[in-house]
Image (cartoon, rainbow, N blue to C red; front, side, top):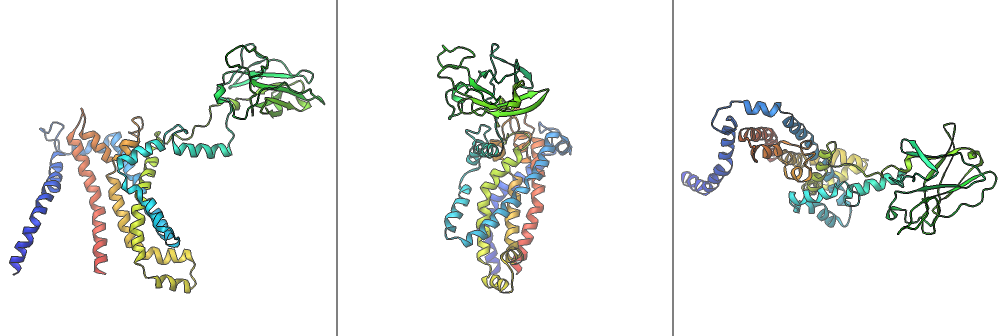
Length: 427
């Protein structure tokens, strides 16, 4: 009976074993074999391919980035744990879990395209920079008129560093005119008003007008306030005496401003802060932050996976243990840290290890999101495997060596996971 059953079992397993041999065992064996040959595949190269992997600068960057990527599974697991615990306390937990898990239904290709747009440098298109710029502009004053400058006939001159200075000291008896050009009418503040001549000065104060000396369609006169010309709202004006700022003011929506009497006899300066290019956010896909940015997209995708598995483990925890801890005087944080997390440790270990194996093979997101200018800075082993194995200058020897290295990196993680699973099975 035993022999018959063994034969039947082998018969049922044979198709699977053939497929595993053809699709898994043979490719692994051939990759190991090919990694010891040169680019052409005809000459034996020994360990030269492996040596080049660890000595090439591009490869070293890929290895370092793979190490950095191991942070992503820990973060995704931590966020998934928080979501799983918190969703137990809300009525609409099913809807929340559905929303968080939904990115798992999107392919890596689609997610890469989505986040390529999210990280776009232009705040008008990239969501990340739109939010970042909005927060920055809330707490930091932004320049209002980048590129603005006076005409040669204007009563202003360049003062170095991008600022402008009146050619003559100002006097309370004469209103000051500060005409500028170089600002597109469409870029003017929406609440800017038609420029007005300043009111008569009283008490020795200095008054004046700063405006955009440009009339649509032409016909305006330089250094003259025309009816359709707008005031430069928010333009900062400083009164300078002996190199020191003695007073400052900002132009009203109609361009008018007033300085105290101590500004009499000073030269007025328009500081360079008025003319800087506006803050344009962070270069998310630049060389410095491209890897963390792509990791963010990975965490967005896989947090739902971690949350669902952890929530399943959380549902299996006996509630009486949690209640007993609360009866003994433990607060919610202590219950979470000393009871919930230890009981969930097997699930947390499985999720973390699974995601670690996954990030060692990450390729799609980096290939799609990272632009060509920073792809070398975001390089990882799986991407380098593709770049080395395909294309006009492909070197299958080096590509096979990278594949073997990836296999060797995954094996220890798999062994830890298998041991953990066997330990849990014995319980």
